[in-house]
Length: 289
Image 1 (spheres, rainbow, N blue to C red):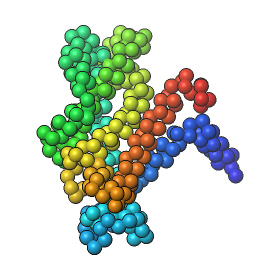
Image 2: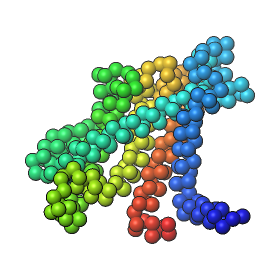
Image 3: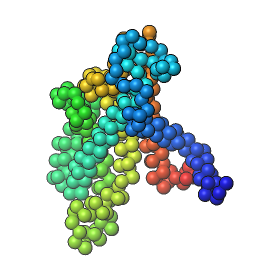
Image 4: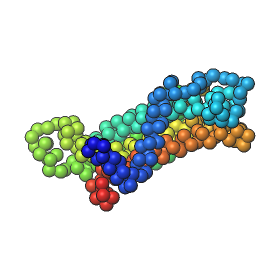
């Protein structure tokens, strides 16, 4: 065994010992990402193909996760549902984070009446209402579809990122290196992008990782209510809704999509916790990283 291989194995054993949940989260997310990206090649059947002769079949060699009430292969729908859920979660977090950076950055850096207007009349207004209720309201108003679903979830989730960005910007905007850049004639945009943003990115990454878990739950909720991606596109929430009437005679229809949602949420939460521990110097010293 080479020195490099031995050191890599030692590092992996050390990570497993000190942060086992981080490894579990990474494995879960890698499984879902690989399954979602490679769904066209990994899915054993077409997820939309109806076969009424084999409806409500239990897991077998022909259908590893059974079939639904229309005879569609559950495993294939789970893989394509992972593709959809991950695409929605990444897109929503990117849009929400962009809005949060712009609005929270302006409020925190400029202060004064801009901060008052954006914080009091924008952030606090959205934060006063539950995000999932806002998402349901906007999804019902906009109608089903991928773009409308992303917009509805982003509208309900951007305020949390904006509040975090505002607080972080206010904590560093008067530091010496920011004053030095301002004294040298740097503009506000350059100061924010080159001197402020790199120093506040750590908590934002943690919030984004945990936020993806919330988006997956929200997407499943909206799809369960019929406000997500329209049929016949496979969605974990829609699969749970379809399985309600067969909870006792075909429990696999509920167990598999519920396990998929739970696994994805746990994976992102474990990843967020691991990022927080890794990026916080005090926590790294405590756990010996």
